[in-house]
Length: 210
Length: 111
Image (cartoon, rainbow over the protein chains, first blue to last red):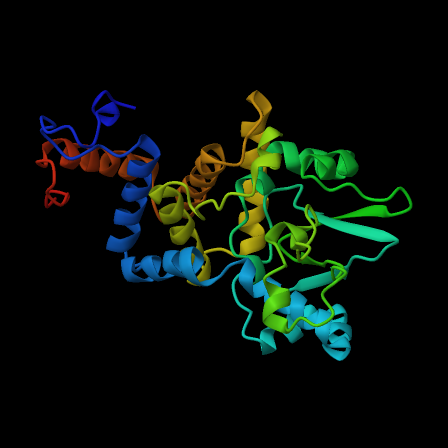
């Protein structure tokens, strides 16, 4: 990084535009070359960023989970062929070509990792959080899942086993958490609000209503 | 993994604008058929493994650094963006920033 990049942005004496960090300039260089060659369209890039920043996120997965809690037929179909079922709700596309939903039960808690990189069901959860991409999580989720869960504040009964699912570019997993007690009268929307992102990765549990 | 316990605050999808840009470029190229995603994932995991040898990666900036390295290598290999051209344009952008008055839009000089 050059000295200029460290200058404060609001400095009135700042004579020139703030120099972006070194990797940002490398990305700009790639974009310029690829745009000039007609391999990418800058407007399409803006659209992709807008989609993942503002439109696709864990609220999609939460809706699927809430629906499964309410409708047994939907749940059965979801566990059988998640990709097909969520496509009907409009959740398909990039990195959602083959999604599998696994159900938590009192006997088995499930959690998801991508040990190789960061494979994740984008149409249902959006872009993964930083910790999902960290070496620590990727290495430890398989080796010591209970310890990792404890760090997320999840302590399971000793009779509940933990199964870890390794997402890949071919298969991406989503966890169907158990419906919290005390939610009998709730509708789909109210239930969806209880479904956290982490509960669908398996590193958390749904929020319990007060 | 202390970060795991402090995940309740909402975090931005992309911490830096360039993270979003390099992500979008890669997705766009994948959709244009320049490479398939499983090939990308394989290459990316090799870079992550290599970079993770020297120090533990935290999944933030270092993750997108690895992403960018992977993309640069792939595009060089495909002949879509050669390292020399990338370097020259990198320098051209740097010069453009350093010679544009603060507050003005930054453009490359016509080459």
